[in-house]
Figure 1 (tube, rainbow, N blue to C red):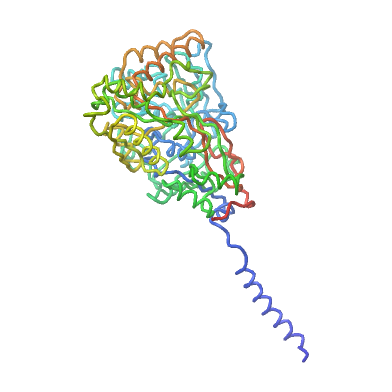
Figure 2 (figure 1 turned 45 degrees about the vertical axis):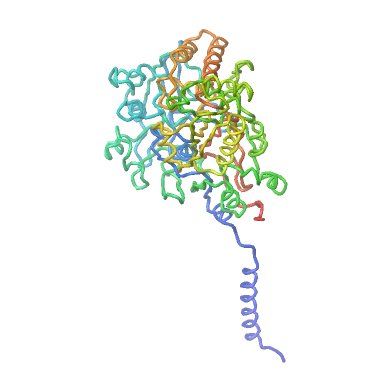
Length: 552
């Protein structure tokens, strides 16, 4: 039978439609990360919900990741070299004696409401974080500024602090002493500007719990603005149309997913639900390196994982006890058994090579179980007898738990003492640390800038980040002498003396030095490794091509 012309085309159209449906059904379904890449949305695993998004008050790396998308300071870091580059300030000059910096503001720098970012916004922000009524833990980071410490201590007025806006365009900063790394300090959120009108509207100048950081209220000056903040779901940022360098923003959105379980995070990555993870489950690392090595990165990272000791709580108020605990841990066993990514065991607090700094081997901690037992006996607890049960507190994470369990077993076996494990959510953990409600707390410190002072200043008596209760005038004096040292060699030598003293009294128990181990999709371009794991999302692209490991 022959088909007439019209019937033939009708029949052909029906067949073509059916074939199209069939092909669509057979075609591989796009993963969420592939769809997000097509829409310019970067999906990042972030370990936990942020405790807050106020630049003056946050202290965690998870918060810092988000804030680097929402704000920018006077200068920004080149994400390849960490060299200082213009940001809200288009240029700056330094006096011959290194005590005065003058920043000229970029007239194109805008807040997300379209208003101009002014030198006055920086003066306001810096004096706010220093205001003793706010109680900001990172206030001590600004003590390099002239009279900042005295103002924070309530001894002088804010007008005497060495930061001054000269009109809208010029910010003048006077320092207590020459600080060769001062511009690199400015990458940190403690130095970010703040929208004064917004904070005053919500009464946030001297108050912590305010509404100004809610998505509908927040005004910021970074490449993105806050679109959504949903607890246990995500923090979503969208492109800021008023950003001064719009041509360098190639992403439409960045979303941070709070996945505290690293095994869950790894499954999410393999299922195509993330572009970048916060870490890698050690148990998955060998398989990932075998099946999808292009997705695994192991970057050098200036950070230390350690245990913080509450020196106010007996029997931990005895340095012999603290040193015994530190000496009876097998760090290499922890690294090789649980981490498996080339991390280095830490017998000091400052990573070797930080700004050419090196603590002599004889000044570092040692691992010596016999000596640890003698110290514990001298403290009145032979073989652990009558030693009270102490607690290791850690924030919820599958990576922290096995390390705590390993340390628990080592202390039971080597010292005969009992330890309980106690896990808390990230906000609850931070609160416990701030309030001294712990015996020993899991902690970490990743450099805000590449200088040993950034590590050692934490344990000054005046530091708001010193949650150990450790106070030693001799330690403070060595740090102060280093600040006024005439030469780099003298400075580094004094810092080494200070760290040796710190380790001998052991308010901290270093465990290992970080290596930034994470997974990244081939869809992501322009994500550079650097010692501080610093990313401002400029020049980062998503190219909808390439494949990630399929779920197995």
